[in-house]
Length: 333
Image (tube, rainbow, N blue to C red; front, side, top):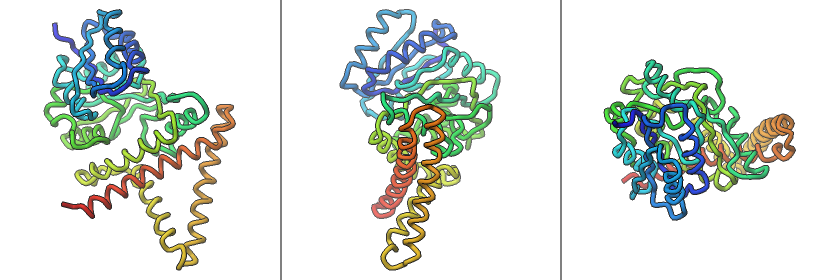
């Protein structure tokens, strides 16, 4: 009998976390005989496949299928995994996530109750490594000052939203809107959800659906992540300009403001004052938040780490989007 639910997992070099995900899936309250896992591996060069193979031997009651994602991108991996799935319901997860035991059951319940055409839950963001830097990044990634109104990072209220992490949906819906756009290497999920909403569908966020998500462990990893987010966000916005939210517009506007002040710094005296005032005010707010979180978590170095993490998130997102826009204008052909 074909499984009712297919969990699809695009991954690359996730030997340290893939077994944690598989264990969490194996512990789901949803019947395992109605469940399958399809992993789209982007030709991992570590022991990811070995870890999956060992888990399958020890847990033969969980059906796991591995397909090779030769294009080695996330949207291509998702499309490939769905193509090789058998379930009528699709739940996407990442290899560095750990869903709560009721994750699958609650996703299916919300879909069957018609709460949304695509449903998802809230991230419990955990450090991706040890030390104060990893803790600072994880704490910043759940703070509204850093992520704006991205409700899936902090809300306690069920509501209709524009995006959810990962997402659960009918395979028929996936096919009807055309799957994930493989020309977008990041923001592919937001673009997919935009097409669902434009087709009349609803994205539903249920905070009872919870999943641990491991944040980036270092500032350099965080910078690269948010640069990519900004760079590919502009490509997505060219198609759907009305989909932009204020949380996405503020970072590039702030970076543009600072660049204008830097350019006019030497021949407009007012620019020197405005630049100094803007930076002092901005970092005062960041350090205030950092001190509050350091006191709350009893971790002194957060007063320094959180401002650095938030500044990286804002700066790299805004710079990536502006660079993508300028590059597209210059090399229009």
